[in-house]
Image (cartoon, rainbow, N blue to C red; front, side):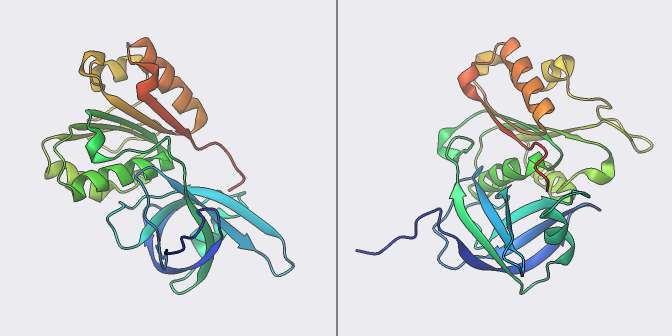
Length: 248
């Protein structure tokens, strides 16, 4: 019998690559030996240990598809944070990190589960939804998807180029942006926070029995989930994950 590593055992992994996403966001590509695999939507815990023994840990969604050979997390630097400034600014390729996981089985999706999918993200809440989009692309799945993504400005859109590329190559994928604080000249997308009217225009009709995944700051997630149920979505079909303030 082959021994398996408990998911909640800490392990040391190597930073393979650091990819700038926006001025405040980076993706860390991690080389994890003997990775058991994960489902799109799961997360990991990352632990830092200071020289005096003080430890801090945070949870980060896995942004890479299960089919990729490495795992990727996407980190937004919080100026008063305890962990994210180190991850975003201090780490270099070849450095070591402690992590455990994968964790979580509720906020996950596999192509065999079908759709259509409604994905709604705010800020760095796009990370687990990106894992789903990458997983879908890896399988060339025909499941239709609409992604509604709220960012403060065009410069704050994470994975912007990849999202544009995925949508350009796939008529069954629609990416809709809303910018809440600043819009570039000529912007034709939405210009406000996600509201009932916007969801009415973007979301699948409840009769199509969509699966909805909503991830982002707590106020956005609670508002969108409530509105979707008001619009007729089965509450059991609306899965949420919150990125509340954690101290970074």
